Length: 248
Image (cartoon, rainbow, N blue to C red):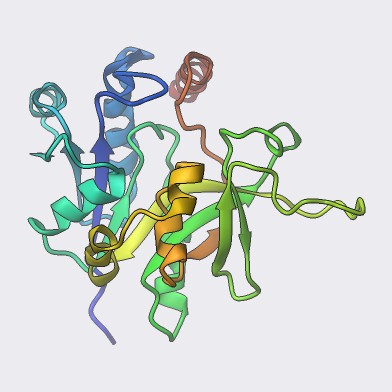
C-alpha cells in the first residue's frame, strides 16, 4: 500500500484586495474573517498542517496573536497561486491546497472532493478544483465564475460569462466554479515560469494560465456551495450564516 499523501493547507491572505479592501481583517460574527477560514480549514482532517501565507506584517501579526502558523510572503506577488508557490519552497508536501482567505464556509467534504481525483485516477493528476451546480441567480452573475468540462472531468474553460451559451433553449446544466485548488509540487513550480496569458488578463482568472499553456485542471463536482466574501452584501450574508451555524 502506498504511503498516504502529505497534504498542506495554505491560506493566501491578501490585505489590499481589490473589491473589498482589508476584508481578511474585517470582524465577522465576533472574529476576523481570516480566523473563521483558519478554523474551518483546521476542521478538515485531511490536512497534515494548515498555515497562512500573509502579504503584510499586519496580517502576520494577527496570525501570531491567534497562534496561527504564518509565513510572510512578498507583497509584490501577483496572485494566490504565486503565494502558494512561495510557501512550497519553504514547506515540503505531496499536495498543496489553496484555500481562499475569504471562504469561511469551507467544510471537510470540499477537501475530500478536491482530493478524490488524486486517489481515484491511475494517470498523473497535477491540479484539481471543484464545481457545484449553479443557482439560477448566479448563471448571469459575473462574480460567479462558470466552468465547462470535458467528459473526463478536465476543464475546457472558466469564464465570468454565461457558458455554455444556450443558443436553442436546450437548458444546459451550468456549473459554478469553487475557487479551491490542489496542486502537486511540480505543477505549482511551473506556474510562475509561465507568462500571464491574454485570457487570464481578460477574465482576471489566474487558472486560465494553466489551460493556455496546455496543463490539465481536473474539476470534481461537489454538492456543497460556498460563499466567497467579495462585497459588503457577501459579508453580511456570511455573518448571518456563521451566527446561525454557531447556534446549532
